[in-house]
Length: 145
Picture 1 (cartoon, one colour):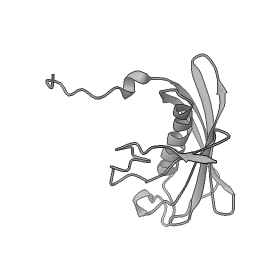
Picture 2 (cartoon, one colour):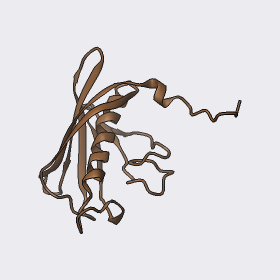
Picture 3 (spheres, helix red, strand yellow):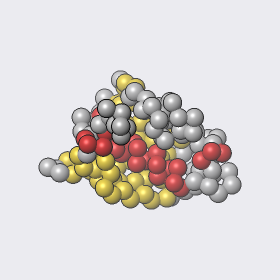
Picture 4 (cartoon, one colour):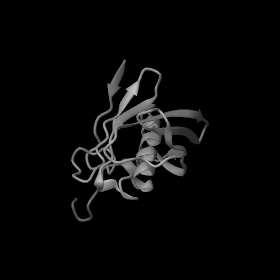
């Protein structure tokens, strides 16, 4: 069984209030894997007919961080590594999955993959995340009280 993770407002990757969002919908699986099924379109194009590497990296970064959030930690990335194995075509459904690989006192490590429809790994990544709850407090506008 899986449950949908709430949308994140203006998030670049999964925000339902952001008209330029990539538009991912996340699901948390019973085994604590975070997953999404989606397509890239011309808004994320890099090489003609294919997703920009930065769009793939952003999706993986969001997944690798969000899986840590789903475990109850407010974190930010301090290091991500992205490996491009195959070009990701536009307008073709891909799947993304991320999981926590290690937790220690200060750092949480996660990994993720974007797979093509035939299950070939197109892009993989690893990330290191640290606690950063101060980044996610409500934004206060100077002079607003």
